[in-house]
Image 1 (spheres, helix red, strand yellow):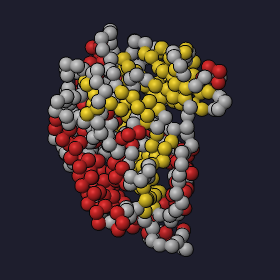
Image 2 (cartoon, one colour):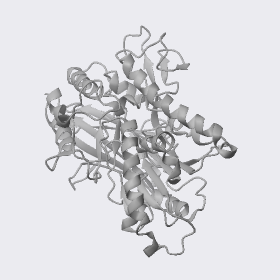
Image 3 (cartoon, rainbow, N blue to C red):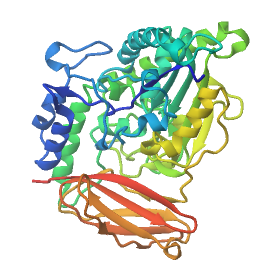
Length: 469
């Protein structure tokens, strides 16, 4: 309702990790790009082994007091757009009525949910003491509207079902949340985040995969993102299996990390199922609305080679938001009738926290009206990279999907993140409704954007280019 407290929970990467006022992750990520891949670049953001859902010792802790405001990414896993337009996206609530929960995204989502419980209790008390001055005719006492982007939705739902959050919440809104995990988390933790075999950049790619694997293997949040839907295929086969299938294990993926993912999901499921058995009519005491994408090619499955020795580059693509496949985004725990709480959109995961995508939804939620239908943002055009990161010095291919794009005044550009100069990119037809460009770029984070007219649509993707030597 309009008088409720709004709590925003950012996704993975969405909080700046700082020490002594310096953004440690930003510095570490840039060091990884600009130098040959080595573990030292990520030493300041590393965690000890076996942390579980506990806080690390003081020397591993980082300050988490500010939201990310510009785009960032972890190669092979996901990116975050930053949240510069957050108040407008949430319908411009009163400044005192909006609070952003900042947390260390490296740590367990279960730990973050416990921290969220403390945060909400404090902030709700604060807002309850002020609400009379702003909403004197409100129908009841303020409760909480949780708005959670990406993996923040895992924290929000865990808080509600496992940390006694049900008594405070009016509504949960999730935006591109991987309810059932991500196939790319398995690839990252198996040492194959950046696909590709052979070629002059093979050694650099292998070193980068090793550095990323060794760092991510100690981050509880990444292990908890392992897919719990059937996401594994054998080469030459079409049937998909769970990553727990001992007959075709994921080569290089530690079994203890699989156990961590299952434990995280099972804890939530047990609590949720227990509540549903005692809830009046089996319904939740709070409303749930889940925005999810279905129009962009998204990594959905992994493929193990015929001899079981390695993951191939033949990842299965399915519909999704470019990061989260539609099958993982479905919040079946919140209702199964028709689409349950699902609101399907054509936007990418990175674009869901924007005024264009979210404002009307949140205004409806705050009025107590149901947001519904197919939301704005259907693109009709989609950029696709075979890999989210490449090694400098080697050309890489970019694909563009869409109908009759050359006759719709197609314009394509690329630019280095943080720099204003845009360079044109030439795409050529590469099949029915498919276009392809081959690009060469210097080390850094680059954006590629495509625009068309009649009707007007656009799509934009980030790719990270690493220094090889």
